[in-house]
Image (cartoon, rainbow, N blue to C red; front, side, top):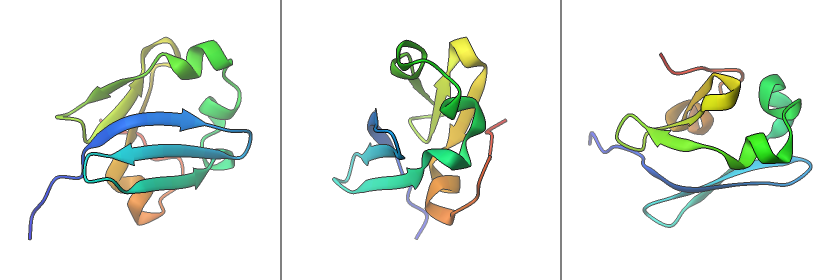
Length: 81
């Protein structure tokens, strides 16, 4: 089965990055996995866009991209090309 995992929304708390998927699942990964995001302001974190048909997340102000698939795989510090 080759199904794209697509994001719907992104939220943060002091410990985790939360990504709600279009299918209703929610992925939580430790913020400590993403140094650039951990060091960003709340305003910068709130300014994200979905990229690559909603399979990735970009924070333009930070020049940082994250693959949702890499979150599911447990890969730390993965940046989408």
